[in-house]
Length: 464
Ligand code: SF4
Image (cartoon, rainbow, N blue to C red):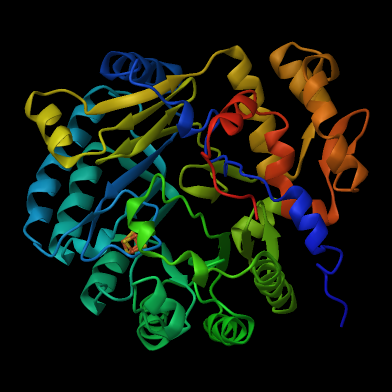
């Protein structure tokens, strides 16, 4: 059988494997600064409230605790086995949610809610229920709302799952990475296939019939082809509705826990590419369809349907079918997206608590988008979601002439055009065929901030 990805060679990888953002936002978090704080946030919440009382919101809740910190982790995590920390955090989260809801008196409908971490099931089932009811005391879930939570099979009990199912959660996201015990040991995790399988089977039994997502990672220490293939066999045996396969982001200058990984254990570039292509081929063979960058889903999953129809959206929670423009972030380190501005909460628990004790919203930094940022964000998000951008639509929407405005970006796309990865047509820019594996590179051509950042010092991980 011909590999769908066989046109990707090591030479291609070397040419296009450059440090680059994942574009969950534009400008990326690297551009956030402390000149943006609570007063700007309050003003934009007010604006969001006035701008569309009938337009639903998206809500992200961050629960930062994990019992141990995995060596590879790049999330904002507080590692502690003192389970009592959860009770205090829950109280403060509730305060923050109430304060935000007070600033949004007209706009209370949620189309999407996502609890991430850390480990959201660090909360006990009764704490989860309490928080959920608190949120519903202030916001109303739209019919068909997407209610997602990240679950770690190592700490998520049947009681947790039963509670989540009863409350109405309908999406589960599981970090799997790689089931190989050698890799699990190298990354300091220790999650078995059996406990993952048990969680998935129980979830399906109690009604999670769609939207089960697995996150895998390639490029981890001690990964090799045969065990990786065996791990993929097990993943496909459980047939999650959605799969994401990420390139490991090795950023020890930002995440000190990654210094525990041994550089000599990392797969060499040729093997790393082989791991990636193997995953892609196995997903295609098993009937999954590509969704934006790094994501795949079964053909009848709503993400695949939206991708085929060019309606995919992207935000800090990942790909979604919900066209939600305003996302509120609650909890330590969470990020909110209020159309013209991004706002990030304090990353330290003590600072987060201190702000709320003083009845202040705990915003630490952010970024206000100027007109240029808004045009570029639109273009970049279209590329990342739908592998193309309609030049006429952009020109109309932002009252510009696309080709003139993006003259230098189009020049930067030349290398991808030559490789056959991008077509710059009269009416559209399209990412084609194998070029979809390098869609980040196409987006990077439209990123005004990138050039100066990458020449200063390493900021982003590699694109592949
Ligand atoms: S990878 Fe997941 S479980 Fe491990 S430390 Fe990070 S958030 Fe916690």
